Amino acid sequence: MKAITLILLALTSFNLFAIDTSIDEKSTETISAKLYSHQGYPYKQLINRANQVKLSFTESKAKKLVTCRVNVALGNEVFDSPKVTVTNAAFTEKPLASCLARNQAKAWLAASFARKRH
Image: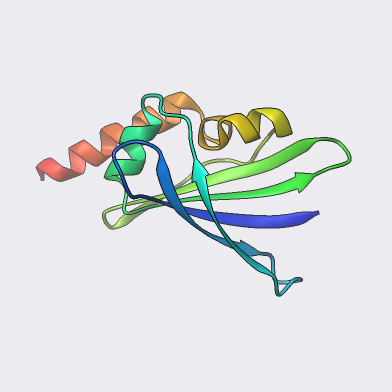
């Protein structure tokens, strides 16, 4: 199994993300790639408002499962989602949406607006 961390930075208002991919400390391999993500609400807006969105995941090729979690930096605060296990197919189609519950993404997005007002 490989543990991979993706750092997503919104480059456009649509779907292009720069990814810095780092394999866990057991490996010296580093991969850089581009990821196209699902455009649905609230994920696109959350990515655009966040300072940083980090998606960490571990693949189990034998079981065709991915265990993942999301870390979002909004201003001076960092939010972490719980680890979830999803199918490889779901992760491939919608990596962020499959790893971060929609209601959690909406709450973090709302928090980004609340912090802006103070």
